[in-house]
Length: 169
Image 1 (cartoon, rainbow, N blue to C red):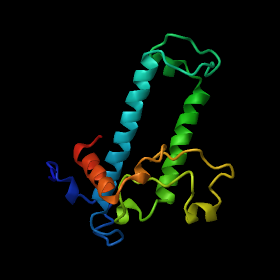
Image 2: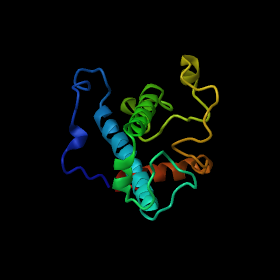
Image 3: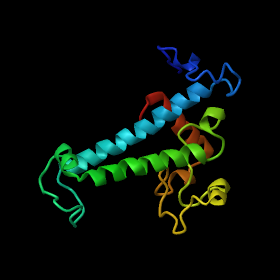
Image 4: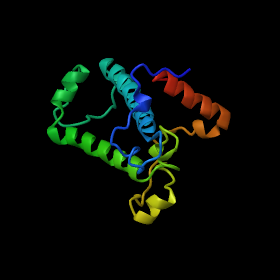
């Protein structure tokens, strides 16, 4: 069922719903999208932490000065500042792509929260603006192995409900 102990579904963060600039429910769409996105990032970060903590890494030296046997926080501290900024810039680019070129209708305008535009095959808006790189991308963020695309609409809908209700998969 629907559980909202803080009353977040009735919030209007930016006053845009009351002003009529966004439809009713835009704030809850924003909150759902944020919860799904941050849940996915948290799951990926947890897996990455576990992998690094067990000493698993690529066979080559990832950066000059890499020291074997460091914990994940020590590895982050050992990264050169330019490498850390690469992470933040890449995250910013992905955020901008997701907000400016949504897959279908934007989540605040009634679209599906948690859906990210394809990086393998750009939508018409991405291609017409020239933001899609000429070399393309080998995989999508949302469905890198193509397994979700093969599911029926009923299973996809159930998966979205489970992800929203549980906060995480």
